[in-house]
Image (cartoon, rainbow over all chains, first blue to last red; front, side, top):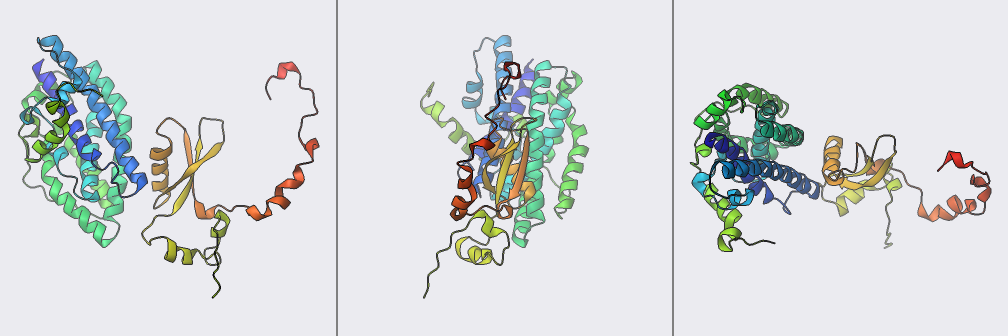
Length: 253
Length: 123
């Protein structure tokens, strides 16, 4: 049970942290229409993470004596308890960096949910099937921006290539399973993420080719996020995200 | 010096050079600004596409995506049309009297002089 809970929290946390990052664009997008687009995507992501948190809270409450809610999972856990992918906590940077981060994550989510909709766990299968439609659009949207920036002006190309080099070391973690993921795979609940790697590479390569960008060489990959070992950036994100509940416990509005 | 204040209607943008759109670009909009697009939404199958508003986008593909995000996020539609605003030609408001008012006293053009059987229902 604990491994299933960890697995669900990892799915929820990646979405929540990327939501918090993307939300910083709200009101600051490069143009009104794109401000709305990234905010829409962000709302999709937090909707998905709420589904995961609610499910995790239910399992935690059923299996232990505690009383947690989706809110306490998001607002009252510490940095080491968060299992989000390192990719999702990386800085917004410029528009290119935000786009590349979203594109890498959306393509990963797409192949993950595509498999997860056949999970033996009905709840996860349901969430995945519902989320897949949203994610399909996120892949299209972010992919088109990769093409626009890569095949755009000299400056946009330079910026997106810089963003890709910056974020590439955080892509390997998506396909390296932690112990709780491996046990969920053998239980027929989680898709085998090592098998998603080829599909992910193919999609990214296709879009990069259209964008006239070359794939970076496979180099050193950062890991640890899924086990609670994060880059220094997560602490700052959580202090923003959790400030209100930490300072005024149980505040509502 | 004669100061010519010119208003722009959609129709003015039909032929770029003669309509002075290049002057407009250089004086009133930044070079980096994206063109304006008009958005039409079909709210459900069988109904017409209706004008919903306008937005900025770099090209048609982006206009459709933007329209999806700006205008259909509350289930407003099942189909989208986009057209660059400069391609829409409008009638001149100054001609309104000649164009539309002659129809005012010709009520016989309305099909209101027929009795519709109850069975037909709303028509």
